[in-house]
Image 1 (spheres, rainbow, N blue to C red):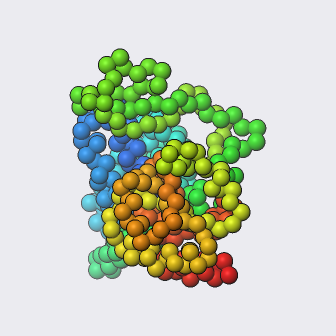
Image 2 (image 1 turned 180 degrees about the vertical axis):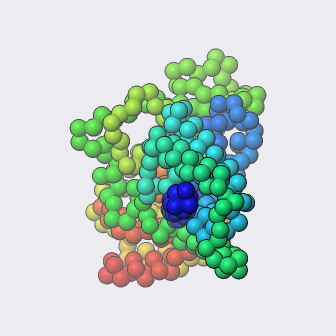
Image 3 (image 1 turned 45 degrees about the vertical axis):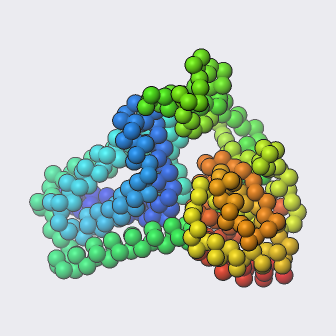
Length: 380
C-alpha cells in the first residue's frame, strides 16, 4: 500500500505542477475561459448579477488558482503538511471535476482550459482526467496521516516558498511581456489568411448569429429572425453577440471572425493582409489608459516612418483611443471584434510586424524598444 500511495503522490504532484506551469504561461487565457463560464452561468440564470461582477476579477482568480495549483503539486511531492493539503487538493479536484463535467455534459464549451492553449483537451477528455485524479486524491486523502515529509520542515517550507515566488513572478512576466511559449493561432511565423481557411474537405460548423441583451436584470437572447416585439434600446441593453452552434462540423479554421473594417464599416481584411510589403498592426483592447505604452510608441513610430511601414491600429474602441495618437499622424484605424483581439493580443497593446499576411514577430508594449531595433535591422 505504501508504494501505491507514493506512486499516487508522484502522479498527482507532477500533473498539478505541469498543469499549473502550462497555464502560468498564459494566465490571461485562463481568465478569459473563466469569463466564458461566468457568462454561460449568467445566461442560465445562475446568480447573474454575481457572475457579471466576477468577470472583473477573473484575472486575479486565474493568478491565484495557478499559483495554488503549482504549490499544491510541490507540497504533495515533498509530503509537506499533508493533513492540510490533502483537504485542499480534495476540494480543488472536486471543483475541477464539476467544471469539466459541466463543460462536457452541457456541450457549451469546446475546451475547458485545463492545460491552456498549448495542450487543448476536449471537455470529455478533461472530465475523464479529473475523475482519475479524484480517485488518486481520495486515496491520498484516506492515508494522509501515514505520509511522512521527504525533507525537514525548514527545507520543505523553503521549497514551497520558492514555488510561490516563482509562480507569481512567472505570471507577472508573461502578463507584461507576452507568453514564453506562444501556442495561439496568431503566433510568430503563421500566415493569418491561411489560418482563416477551413482545411480542404472539411465540413464547417453551422451557426446562427445570436444576440444577448439584458432586460429587467435578466439575460435574454435571440436571433435576428425572432427579435422581441417590444424591442427598444431603452428596455433592452446590449450585452454581446455570438455565433450559436446549430450543427457541429468536423473541422474549423484556427482563426475565426477576424474581420477588419474601416471606420465607415467597409471590410478591408483581405486588402490589408495581402499587402506584399511590411505592415505593423497595433492591437488595442478597450481603453488601456495613458500608460507607458504611449511614451514607448513615441519612440517606436519614427522608426516605422523611416522604414515606410504603415501602422494600423486595430481596436474595438476606435473613438475612445483616438486621443492617444495625436503625435502619430497618418495612422490608420481599423475596427475589429473584441474576441479576436483578445486572442491576438495577450498584452494591451501588442505590436505585430507582418509581411504579406505572415507574422514576422510581435512584441508587448513593454518591449517596443527591442521592437524598434529589430524592425530597423530586419527591414534593412
